[in-house]
Amino acid sequence: MSYLPATWSCTPTQTRYRQPEFAQRHTRAGLRSTSLERAPAHRREELTSYLPVAATTINSYETASQILDVTVTAAPSSVADDDDEATVAAVDSASVSLRPQTLPGVSGSPLCLVFRARVAAHKATIHAITYQVAIQSRIGGEGNGTLQRLNLARTQTPQ
Image (cartoon, rainbow, N blue to C red):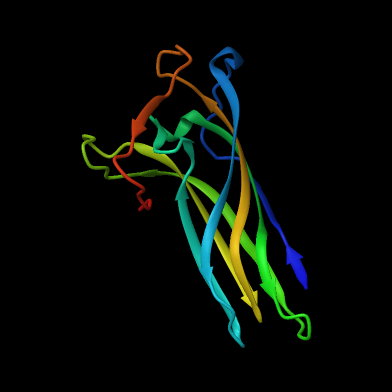
C-alpha cells in the first residue's frame, strides 16, 4: 500500500501589504470524507470544501490582496485496501483559492476560501482525507484586526 500526501505552497502574485501589525497567520485543519470506492482500475475524484471557522461559519475577504501566503497539506487518512493486491491511495493535489460565492441570505458575492483536493485510488477505497491549511492574511479593511464572518444556513458546497 502506498500513501502519497500532497504538499503545496503558493505565494499569490498580489502586492504584499507591508504592515505586519495588520497581518495574522491562522491554521485550519479538518477531515473531508470521500466517495471514492474500490475499483479494479485507477480512479480519481475532486473534493471541494469551504475552510470553516466553526461548523457553519466561514470568513469572507474584501479583496484577494488580503491573502499574503498559503500553505496546504493533505493526505489520505482512512483507506481500505486489499492485502493481496498492489494498491495506491493518494492525494494528487491540494490547493486553496479565494473565490466569489453566492450564498443564500448574503448580498453580493463575497470572497471566501475554497479548499480543493484531487484524490486517486487504485484497488483501494479512500474514505477520508485530512488537511491542514496555514494562511497569512491582512485582516480588516481598516486594519481593525477582524474578518467578516458568514453563517451558512446549512452545509453547502462551494462554487
